[in-house]
Length: 452
Image 1 (cartoon, one colour):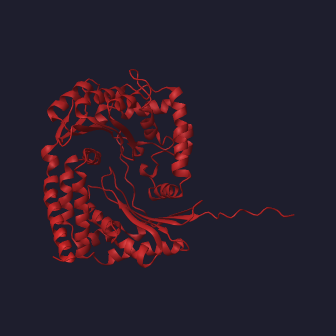
Image 2 (tube, rainbow, N blue to C red):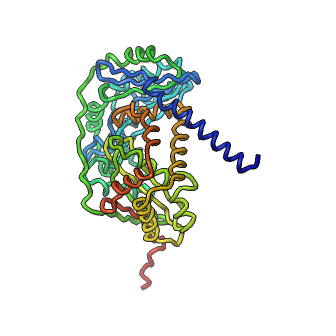
Image 3 (tube, rainbow, N blue to C red):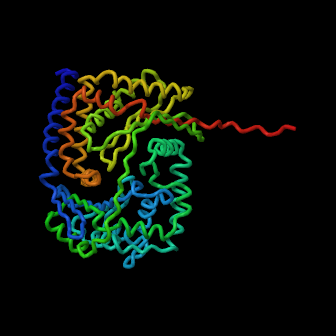
């Protein structure tokens, strides 16, 4: 068998394997997840996975920058930091030390929609983790001597990750321009002035308002029996009072009335360009077509943007598209590129717009559709080998409104046609709704002094 035929056979075997695994993976969640809501409102999602004697437990709180008000931005992220600073029962940083002594690892992250705490450890030691998480759900001790130093840590984090990072600075500026009224316009880390003016009382109020069992979801994946683990979770968390309901956040962004534009100048070597379009979340059936479009445009070496902007036109060092439908409210579909040396931002912007217009004017080819489906399916299937990835998937869908929709994902992708992709591009990648962000490198040459 020659090399070409062997490659074709291997490709067919791989495709068949992915399809078979996809069918199994697509039914894992509704069939295998044990779901329960405690009387105090705490939701529990438990997925057994006995491949190894480990488990991951994640506690998702429905609070992020989306739930913050102007002048108090960044409190969710600051509270994530403070959750490791001790309770009445455990000293500062003791949470991390206990998990490390048990051979586990832990961390946390804050996003626009949620704050999530997670740890992975041997499945026979989960009670240790459950006790710690239940304790800090309502027992956090917010102290001034811990608060002030940590605020400086966050301020420095912002300086390093945003203010001193030209592309991050552009993305933050673009988001604040793309959203006029929705809190998605606010940075997760917070605006600098807000960080400077936080008070301990602000943080205590935020904690009391959002860190309640009825505003949380516990997701666990690993080597356990669901009914037994559910009983242990109820033992540790069930006595926590329901507490006040989190205030609803119902703000709908009005459609843009025309194109928007933001240009920033920062110390950078090359221009960077972003095109941002309002895009729907899972609640809109177009999400699957947009997911396919993002892969067709930018996933892999043979993607459209890499072929056109990087290889053929050679106007960009990098070009990509981004879309994530598992947000609580509608977010964005973005295209971005970093210019080649000696290439203007104007040329790269024109090239990005041309890629958008191509898909608005003609559907993708069947080969592009086939390749994109294979990439999406293989990525989904192989992620099932990780208990952490499976827990993250459940958590994201739970925050988006319905964890059971995980099982609809591959079927929705399979049903997308080339015409669907084109129609979605025409509907959502509207030039009249586009927000453009341009990073211009700051002239590094020193200003000449007065020679007189």
